[in-house]
Image (tube, rainbow, N blue to C red):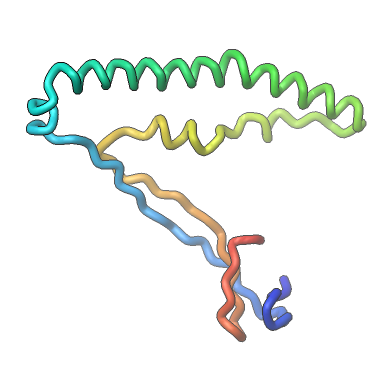
Length: 120
């Protein structure tokens, strides 16, 4: 691996662990907003599951079929494993309140000049 800044090959790849805490609302907040708050929650939950329904039962099969057709045209082997990964918005939407979530990313750091990049 070559550093784009100083063009040395003394690069080190590191795994960076980021922690995210999804915080919920307290009891006083829900008592203060009362009925309006609970109606908003019902609308929000309904839209969340509607998006998931659209993704899993409408969009995902169409994309899978299109990917299969493209692989037939380009004469490449069809791999379903890459199609099973969920987009980032689905993962963020399904996170529960009051929990800590870890996300891991790779980062390359040059040992000569200290340049860091997320591209690996």
